[in-house]
Length: 267
Image 1 (cartoon, rainbow, N blue to C red):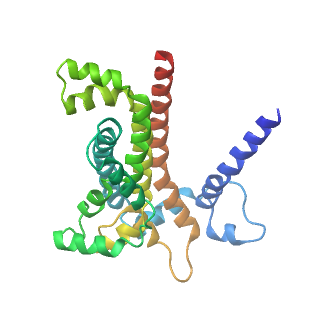
Image 2: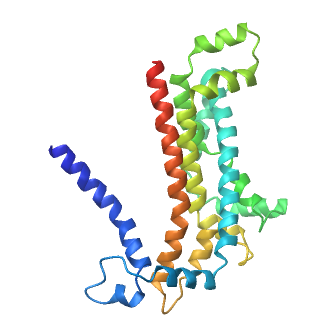
Image 3: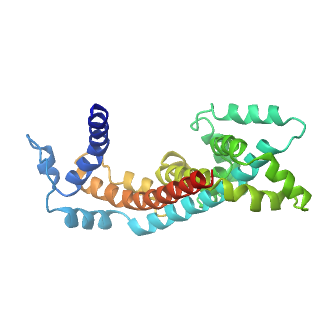
């Protein structure tokens, strides 16, 4: 019983920021700033959303964000799982050293790589393009590490050996033997990557130099003014930006749990 009470309290604490965002998005800023503030949802949501649409190109920015997030997620799932499959199930000279070097890159703060990355994008002529958001995100050290750990335990060497005897090469082993087994790990990595790219603010702010062609997070940042910020309008825009994330999370989490259940039944 105590455990359930603790879990319920934890859920309520976790949900309170989202509830407060809804309260702020559905009330006027004056109602939020007064004392005591409004603590229940109001009737100003549509008015606040209209203000958001007047201030920024919301749907254009959302389209840029969707393209960047979907493109990066698809490529991360492909390349990271390929690299992880190689690290986990194939022996080659320097494998351990390369993996240690890969883990070392996870210790580098992304802020330190922003300037060198921008220089490279400028040399490629990609500054201001969505390619500058997608391509640098393709190889993810965490994704390779996560997939390697999962593949090491989930894909049995006996299956690979049997596939070799049947004449399967590397890519057929990867596609027909490895991927069907590691779908839960791919589902988690897909959710993690999509949310990370969707919420990224620093790198799109740096590399997308055209203020009229930015991602959603940068566009929402334009709603914050030095003086007289309309916080209800900002929260309404934030609420709209969160809805696609919730949809992706619910779909991905459902598939993740379903794949885990299938694996448990097989086991």
